[in-house]
Image 1 (cartoon, rainbow, N blue to C red):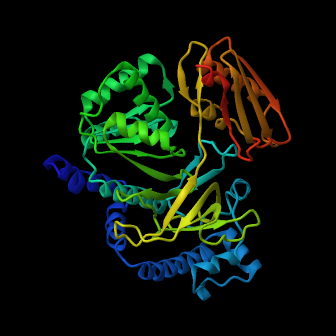
Image 2: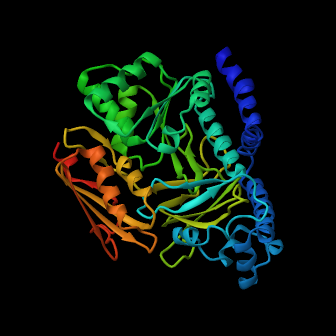
Image 3: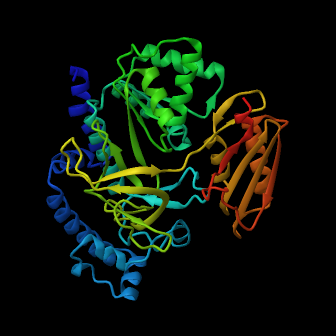
Length: 451
């Protein structure tokens, strides 16, 4: 660790977190200690923390006061993680319809979010400091697995307007001090890609962080240009927010000359799992309980694929209990070669978000269109199909909050990104069918495939 990185990790960033009222430093230290416990020790701690969490929300959160009473559920009697199965699953629509009842009576500061919407049904939810502390502390621990710490130079290739829109003067100063630089992932024109490659080369980051699709796109561009990127000293590329495919891992690793570490989670469900250098996809189990369930909601046996259901112990002010993520995985019962006692997942089949192509040939992330949709009230689910550079079709399932003027807003927003003359056809439908494979895709670009 360089002296400057040590200063950032041990002084500057802890001071930043203290000033914001965050407890992430303590959380990271707690997690770094408990990761070496035996599975039996971890299990005992998780049961105790889950019991305390459920007792707390059963007293402070209106929805759970009622739910526990209706189901005759006594948190103090909880003796195993399996006792959670006495409670119903929580869906995205449950969150949408019970926002006020899910807030604790004496909640602290809450930030309002909705997801990027790659699920096609973005919920609106709230996040308190406990959840923030977990996300920061857990990610911090995971990066340190790879020999990277806060203060090491990093390039973040990201697309959410929550991050992009928050780049005020103070945040830019903080990022400069911590040697973190944010590159917007929405637009992937040749000029932008040239700029990304040049910045990465000049910055010589120790870590890359971003969407696997975006990092792959940059890597492929550098390869086409004949620009070497494997001599920069990059230690690891941490990828998240989309499913990581084998060919993407191979391309990123080969072009940037580094290992690729997969992370899994969501803005709604939290930082759930991360890959270690030994290849194990470890659940952040101290604060997150993961169940895998079948289509009937029953927990599947080890070795069978099931939907990932999350109970997040850091969400006391707006609880997530047995929350259905919509993603699928298989539990891995082995003990990882790294020696950590954290449970493992494998075959995570997270959703992906495609790129789209503007009329002038500019390639951009599909989230550029998704965030136009999320600005409109009353959209329950959607599907965007780019038939060609000149025609994009949008299917919407709406509720009574949807306003007639939103159609024009969507068309205008899409045209700002795709081109002023693009035909944007919006239709209101009763349901959006799955693909022939049974999976759902919410951004489909036939124009991209034609490139």
